[in-house]
Image (cartoon, rainbow, N blue to C red; front, side, top):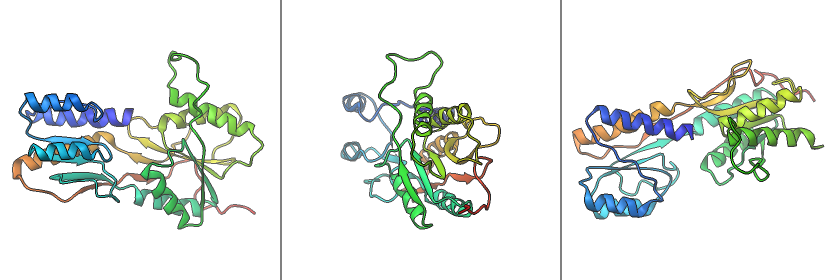
Length: 272
């Protein structure tokens, strides 16, 4: 994804600029990780994922210091890390819920719906606190053509199909859509435009978005904005700080911001 690619690129470039050699491996490639540990001198490891207790235990058993990047801040997932970089989305979701209440929103439809993801739980908690109901729809996957369509991102296609299916159904549409993926948002916007839906007059829309990849619309998107390039740089600086001081640090909290654009109402109560 753009998000993780941007984080990784910034992380590796920052460390390379400071004369550090970096090897990136997927957490699922356990044997490759063990081979590297057996054949190379590793000064530090970074676990860039949720959980992965086996990896932290491996590093601890070999006395390799490690940084845990983006664990769930509600869980004890650092497991002996010398430092951790934690994503705290709760303030942004609370700001969004407050804006929704002021905009007359009574139901938010979350799409695509990774209901087990900690983001969704924190979103639901914020919305519940304002008396706003959350519903969920799928990704629109399932009947995609074999292979890849030239020039078409699959998440964009899924967003387009999900929005078309909702607009074609006889169910009442929610007051607001919250897209958890900026590519998915692009597809939804195209479907709404094709159907003549006026945003935000007919329906409001908010997207999680990554700076550098924010969907372009006739008006700025209301969004919870991540800055993945900054996240990667801060993660690298956390590692460099440990090399310099050799001591354990408190978690570094990263907080994306809710930014009001033109796809939601400002301070407009829902008409009854």
